[in-house]
Image 1 (cartoon, rainbow, N blue to C red):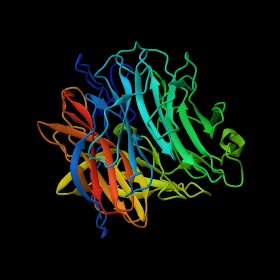
Image 2 (tube, rainbow, N blue to C red):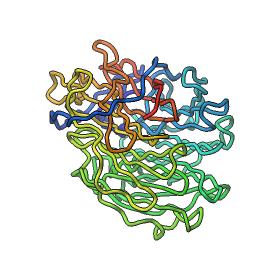
Image 3 (tube, one colour):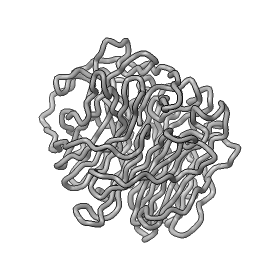
Image 4 (cartoon, one colour):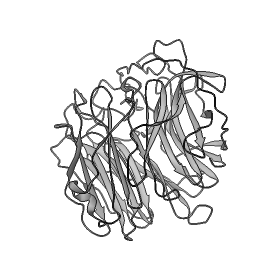
Length: 457
């Protein structure tokens, strides 16, 4: 499972759209040049309350994902608690979306293929609410697909906690081209479990949204925003979504300068299906502090039923990891700094990406890929032949303002696994489950791993 810069093919990751090697072929990569800014972190007194345990492998050779790939169902610390994970593997042809689950994060079920056998799957995400699970992916982004291949959003859903699956459903047209989609789910205050999906149309740059409430059909797509950021294969807004209770939040990159916008809705006082109507959404908010495109930046939106009433939006600026929130009324335009690039654990970091902030009982848990200061011109540069060293870092906050110094979750190992990134997080009252990518320098091996933290913010 690994992450690397934009591929010379049309296959891309959501972070720096990096390519991967399958066992069958080796593919070149286009470098993603990262801004370098070494700034010492301001003084802080908070200490992380989470201690990290042993790493575990999640079944699935030659696998990866880009975050938004771990969720849970049931009640923590009871037999009903279960983790749900999704990833892409190109150990088979065509590459496919796979699902695995665990009741403790130590051992995982054998992978189950959720995507079809006729097209490639890429860019998976997962969301769970109650006994419902939705998995989404995009077709067409793959080294096996020709440039310009149709790209559509497909989903597979389960209503019994992952025991059975209903089959592949396409949410966009077969002839269209879309950016990487993201799915979300939440049990609303009306009693219904709603499923959501967001994506960018690569042909016109519009941010589209659909919802599925209870037993009803998926709503018609509505446009809730737009981007002018484009590459050779179309517009890329990297739209992201999360939901909890009646709150839904979407964030995306609005232009080639890295400007970010967010749009949210609170269903309270409306109806379970109110999000299907554009006029019901709050006005879009321009977020301060542009995402660093040179560092493979994009926003990650997160929420948890264990910490209701708030949705977070996290991203990386050239020098900082930051986040903001939607509290049901407003999206805060000015972000809070999690950490400024500098020294942590006696290691100097000059960049970072794939930032996520998970709401937790009693606080927040942040994670990101921290790029070590190396001999490379750009320390997060995964250009063919270079060897960036990326550690997975974490910081916690009880009040959402003062974060701890970063702790080392998964270190880059010279002559071994040099990249650890794209974290997905589940945080309970006393444990943090982190799932992430790990890869060797030349992508001879890439897989998905998890590590369990004990403690809380």
